[in-house]
Length: 342
Image (cartoon, rainbow, N blue to C red):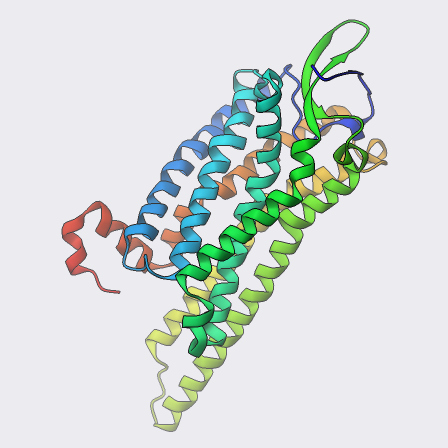
């Protein structure tokens, strides 16, 4: 053990990913019932998605490279952070407290991997916006090699940003007048612990606020461009005395609109509650806002919602467009490939 600390009852000292071993029955049931299928089906779904983006007809596009990276990031989230959370609440085993390596690894991954997943999604959205607004330069701005470089740069930058988290935590001994236990938490004299409140706000911006704003703006630009193109096509058809608009244009507009609504709303609904709770818990006035005994009533469902965002992409892909469904069916039934069209 590196350090021995007395227990502080202030709610602001409750860690981002709490590790108390005394879990209530309701907590165990919620995690077991809801998070178990999210992890299992999410991993399988992301594997299927990865196969589609690697072996499908769009495998040589930049979008496929981004979405392949996103699938890998989501698998890592589910098999590390989500699985550690599941073990903690279902088996009441604090994996992070078992040693320095596990403490640093899982604590770092809890911050790094969800942010990586969010920023890869941002990169995909920006790439789509570029493909709509500057199609004549698509071969330069949206090449597959560019997607790999951008993904690597994003991963490297996030690693640097969260490096103080990795270096600032370790297993410590916590004691009260009646008992003592080991816990993975920030060390006292580290940059991370001295700026704990600031780090929660930094993480909120990196993980939620900035990605959401970028995705929202890019999707608005995409929708505006598609509407503009649809209006031009409609005007052209009207000039030719054809009153019915192109069915292809209507389908494109409907698909893009549905994509914007589904991806944006899913990201907000799944991630906003936990992000807001973490800001409240990490604030100096947390005791005046929420009772410490009630934090877990919110923390458990909000974590499950956050992990659900990493597990539903396969379903979203299937719902959003027919191209993904055709590629997926072509992979699981190779004989059907010849009968499918782009």
